[in-house]
Length: 502
Image 1 (spheres, helix red, strand yellow):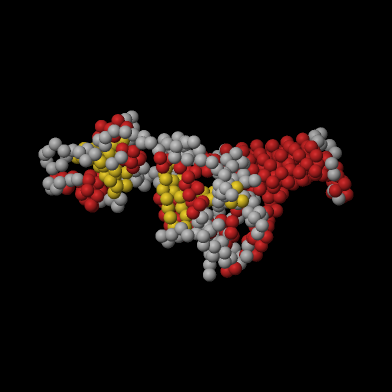
Image 2 (tube, one colour):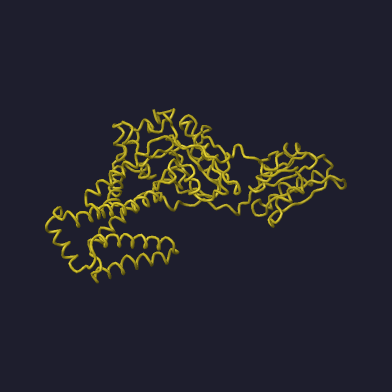
């Protein structure tokens, strides 16, 4: 049986990429490469008080810290030169310069890459090499702040930033074990974006680690500056609107999932981390589940699943019953619905479709505008316009209640990507209800479940644990047992070490 469906792309792998820059390692070559870059700074240093040999020191202003270069590189370098000590690349590597990290580079590609990543390069033209010191500027790094999308009640108050090494340090702080492996790679032919694959050796499935590395290496694009570029290139179904990677901005949730057996991906410049493989129920779990009593967590989980059903099917069920199956409505409620729609000039179908579209427009307006204006637009649209439309008998109150309830249920989803997919499916179900009543709704829901069953995530079933024949694991989709009883990891992840606690 084939474990992974995704075929290898025709693009050239980063692991086998041809050199971008050619030529000898020299001052002129580097100046030609960075020609037109006003932030490219350089300085020549002459050994001793006389002599013909020159050392070429270069960096990118703003990316590398100029003060640190003067203090940690230029000052000790010139002091050694004035003392008459012979300078060589090996002497710098042995500690002649005050820098924690020093790399000997003989490839022009490596030197250019280090300079663009915030290193200062000391070029030895006679040796055709350079020694690169990591002196990144702190001014372009955002400080660690509280998470904004995933609120933390009893968990950690820090979140990922746009700096790769800061993010990996946040994870390393929580998993202080050499078993946490961090594999570096590069994404983007032009952007040369740094990325890191994280996993816990002995827990994560090696096949998933290798597959994720292969898919990342096969990304053959100019730049990787957004989450969509990453997700659509490594997902099994890039055309599917359902999310296939878990996004998180919280290091504690990321570390917990690594210990569960998943594989993580962190991209430099993106303050969000990715986790694979994933299943549909995972998008309905929240980080604070383990911080609450298991009864409370289970009750809230059931509420979130009920919200999924309401957000997806409530407008469609109302449309089908109001148009085709009025006998299913209790008499008193039916009389109220008839009274509310008596003077409304639009049909139920047009009313629901129009309200759903208006709700989406209102949401987009609130997201795109600045916060103070967005809040004002939401209040005006929801209260003033909605109330005025009901009083003018343009729409019925029951339609407003149905659409508003479905909208609130959609906001209850922990994953905004899943909420967006449910909103699109909601339109499809309403159209099916208009066309065939409850028969159309039931058939659409069956197709919905069938489609979810066709999706895989790195060789794992997207609908696990519903699929796979393990009935005893179905309850953990909705309920959480006490943590001392959670002895084993999820069987769907195929972890070498199944036991999470003694």
